[in-house]
Amino acid sequence: MGADPSQLGDARIDGQIIARVFRFARPYRWMLAGFVVVLILEALVGVAPALLFKQIIDDAIPEGIKTGDRVSLHWLAGLAVAVALAAAFLGIFERWWSARIGEGVIYDLRVAVFDHVQRMPVAFFTRTQTGALISRLNNDVIGAQRALTVTLGSVVSNAIVLITTLVVMARLEWRLTMLTLLALPLFLIPAKRVGRRLRVITRTQMDLNASMSATMTERFNISGALLVKLFGRLDQERDGFAERAAGVRDTGVEAAIYGRTFFLAMGFVSAVATAAVYWIGGALVIDGTIEVGTLVALAALVTRLYGPLTSLTNARVDLLSAVVSFERVFEILDAPNPLEDRPGAVELGAVVGQIEFDDVWFRYPTKPMVATLELDPNVAVPSNHVVSGADGDGADGDSDGDRAGAFVLRGVQATIEPGQMVALVGPSGGGKSTLSSLVPRLYDVTEGAVRIDGVDVRDATQESLRRAIGVVTQDPHLFHDSIANNLRYARPEATDNELEEACRSAQIHDVIARLPEGYATLVGDRGYRMSGGEKQRLAIARMLIKDPAVVILDEATSHLDSENEALVQRALAEGLSGRTSLVIAHRLSTITEADLILVIDEGRIVQRGTHHQLMQLGGLYAELYRTLVGDESLLN
Ligand code: ADP
Image (cartoon, rainbow, N blue to C red; front, side, top):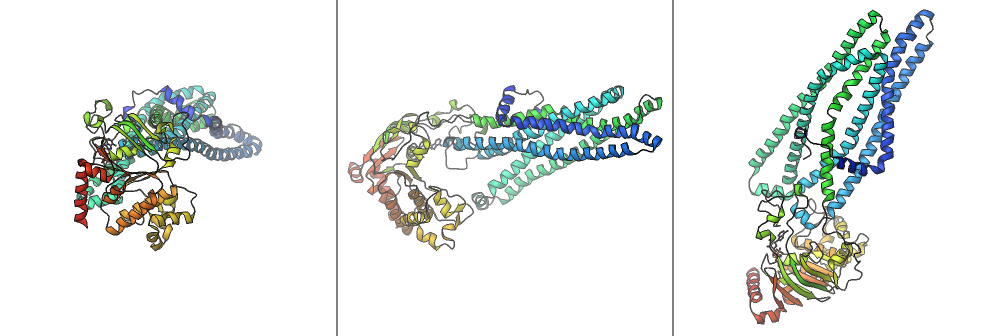
């Protein structure tokens, strides 16, 4: 999580990254140039009051005493007010300007990263720790933004302020200026120490906070909360949380003390330096070497040196952690996407729906895409996905044992004709889901090819490919949004009538119509919770609205009650007619009605044919069928 400043001491600032950051900020180069101009103006306006006061003390007042003429006093005082006003406006303008640059760049970066991540293959999401990814998208992008505005802005502005102030001071009285400079390191070294410690504390604080909120996000969603309750782990959860919260509390106290110390140290340095200037400068005035006004101006200017000097001494560390933030964001942007459309990929037009598996061999990818986001092998995987490489070998995927690297599909050869309903059956883990996920190109085959209407899916644009295919999973995901909007996700321009028609066909309209808010009812995590059967019918309706030529359906394994079963049955009859469908079948009725049954075991098609043919053949299918019949007769 970000850079630990205590470890940055020996790190180098990578020139390539800086160059890349500048390339990223290229559209803003004129704004950046304007920003520097504003900073220079601000620095100049900043030294003006001291000079005006010197004029008042050395010229206007003595002249007034002599002649009684107060015109120059009025003018100079008025000018000082005007300068103060200008400084205020410039300050606001500078903040607005830098915010526009920073927010602009962060906007570009965020959108680029979001888009890149969403285009990554499914394997990326199954192998990536979502929390770490989100945190990187949030924290590091913000770190990068801070780098560009705050850090870069403050380095440039501090340098300008320092130079202008020193030049003006030296012109007023160079010996005194040299003296203040000689004394400065005495104060800067402790300030640097405290500053560094403060930064470490702040970083720890951020990390602890992130971990605390991660715990809350994970425990306070419905499934997390249920799990905690059902396993009776409330006390342990409280203790775990309390431990994190205690960390946040302790670092908070430490941060407060160090923050205050830092602040007071700065005030102390500035007070001592001012006293020193008056002390030594006072002697010079008595000697007649300098005028009183010069002394006052120098005393005022000397306080302008510490802030910039302190932050410039820490600038390297600031810049380094900023560079690390950029590095981490670029790491995601640079992760190659193996599922990128080929140059010259073809648009699939009106798809007829022939699917061909041509000697398909497949193994799940084991190489991590962004190594630092890899799932920690020691942490339980929260989904039902088997994560390959889980044997703890971390970053290098090559030494995975046979288990992860083994072929999941081994030479699958089959052709599905347009309009056919094909049932995939076989023991769990045989490779049915894997095979069906190759059609919409969620993964690429390792060897062989998958073709739709004769076109290799790797040669088609992913957009047109996915337009041609509708997928209904066992547990379809609904966004936290109205039913209508969830349905329209398939086709935003669908009319209300079309939605209703699809829902009637999918046997779900009556259920929706009975809800108090009908199609406007919120569903999803925190909305109306539909039953499994209802959800699946809604997903079928969503698929109907999309109207694809090819349908992939993963039937619910959990048994639906007979009413739901009948409804889903009718919904499917409507939904699948006229389309090519690949069904991972668990229901007897689907299997017996299929035009073709592919029996899949250990990554191969071991039997194929219609129900009758396969029953006569005997073997694995007949066995599976008998178990299913036994199962169903138990239920009914
Ligand atoms: P089925 O659908 O027939 O139950 P699957 O296609 O889900 O079978 O699984 C086939 C094999 O692939 C299983 O051994 C499973 O553990 C493995 N597998 C499934 N998903 C992944 C994944 N994301 N990474 C690695 N292996 C996986």
